[in-house]
Length: 123
Image (cartoon, rainbow, N blue to C red; front, top):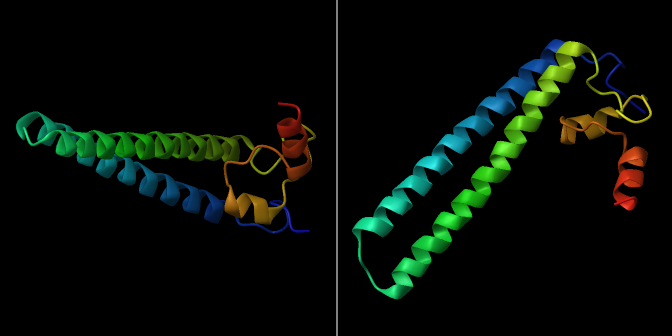
């Protein structure tokens, strides 16, 4: 099983993490602007009750997406911090290497799959 230590170019990983972080921050900016525009439209366009309900729903959807993107940006930032301090790719519970395939899908992962599953069952 390939792990982060198995010949992975950490500079390349850092570049990919930074790129994903920048893309996520840009998505947050777009979502925030769209949400602002929807709020402005709701204030300035009286419309009927259905229009108001639709604007409120659309704004709420943008807010949910923005919150999820913000969480993702924070996780990516934390992954970059772990890359700098040398703990990237190591399970925070057992200390074993997290498989590369998991890190590629979820670069913010802090636990190997067995430890993550145990933690989720314990909830």
